[in-house]
Structure formats: structure tokens, C-alpha cells
Amino acid sequence: MIESESAFWQFSLRFYARDGVPPLCLALQDQHGIDVNLLFLLLFLAMQQRRVSRTDVKKMNDITAAWREHAVQPLRALRRDLKNGVAGMDARATEALRNDIKRCELHAERLQQEMLERTFPAAATGVASPMLEAAAQNIAAYGAALDSVRGTLPADVVQKLLTLFAAEFSAPKA
Figure 1 (cartoon, rainbow, N blue to C red):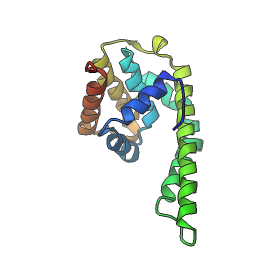
Figure 2: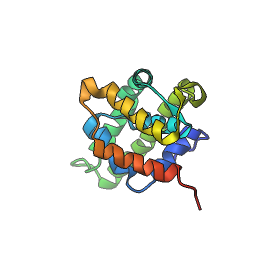
Figure 3: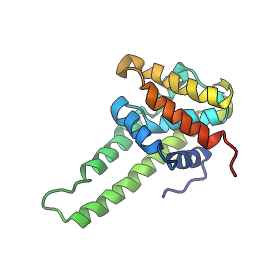
Figure 4: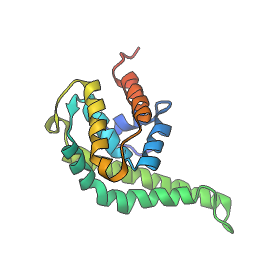
């Protein structure tokens, strides 16, 4: 696991570890072109009671686009390509390489998150808004920012994600 003191990274690890979150995020990523790091920033900002606009989301997306396209996505594609092995290569060696690439992919994602967190600090980003309202509006702003290119986000997946977010971050812990 990649260690980081970043509150945003810790939030992401905690939320992604919640049952049901990974398949929702992967569906949004693979079927709708969502950048999960950006999605998590929007939820992290909501947790800080910050609501952002479509314009804010576009700026966030634009600032990380080159890193995502040149580092994160190629590493992800290679890791996925190696999942079923490569003909003629030792399966254990291929899996060991795949695990190394997975670590590099996580490192690239952490670097992307650090860039986002530095560039869009919660205290100076968006406007104050109640957490759950901000979460829904931030994701809606992301959908609006992508709408002209990829279409709207699936309401059922978004609602499930928001329900999991609310359960994880608005309920008192025992």
C-alpha cells in the first residue's frame, strides 16, 4: 500500500475499501469515462462541506488530464492486459510484473491526488454547502462537465454511490 499523510488520500482509501464502492467506481470509470480520483476529490470536498460548479470540475479535469493520459491510464491498461498472462511467459513472472505495475499505478494515482489537493484546497474551493447536498451537486456538476462529450451519468449508479458515501461519512461511528 502507498503511504501518504494526505487527508484526501486517506479519505480515498477509506471510501474505496467500503463494500460496494469499487464496482460502482469501476462501472463509472470504464463505461462513462469518469476519473475516479476526480470523483473522489468531489466527494472529499463535499465531506469538507464544499460545493463546486461545472466550471470548477472542468478546471480540475483539465489540470490532471495530461497526467491521467500519460501515466495513470497506460499503467492501468498494461496491468489489465497482463491479467490473463502472456503466451510463452511464465505465469508467476507475469503476475509479479503485474503486481509491480499495480504499485506504480497506485503511486501515479496518489501523485494525481496530491496535485489535485494542492491545486484545489478545500478551504479555497467552491462554496459552503451541507455535506450530502454538496456531494450530490458535485457529482451532478461532474456529469454536466462531461455531458457534451460522454452523456449523462447513470442515476442509479450515482445514487448507490451517494448512499454509500452518506453511510460512511455522515453516520456516527460506534
